Amino acid sequence: MNDLPLIDRLMADISRRLPAGLGELRDEVERSVQAVLRETITRMDLVGREEFDVQQQVLLRTREKLEALERSVAALEQQSS
Image 1: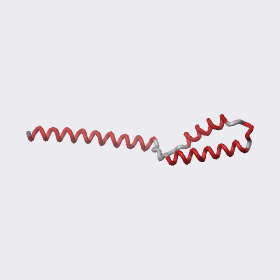
Image 2: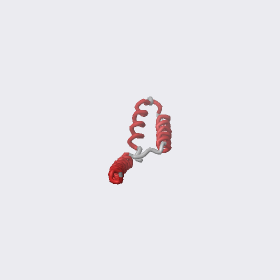
Image 3: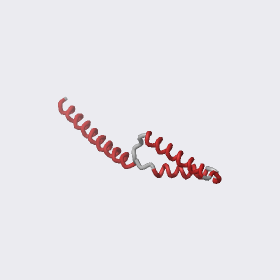
Image 4: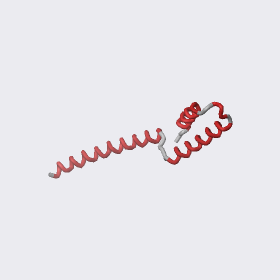
């Protein structure tokens, strides 16, 4: 998963809120927060948009096949009764 845009947005927001006069401490806080964010996002085991879209299409095709099979079974049941 490409988490850089999310982390970049969060870091930009956090950086805007940090006081400008912190100097080196500001840089250290930014690095620490970025490391924590990356670790947290990695642990969440999120799925990327591309993979989600692919799985959504697989599910749609599976659903269509299931509905076709249900219709076939219903037709066969009608014929046998």
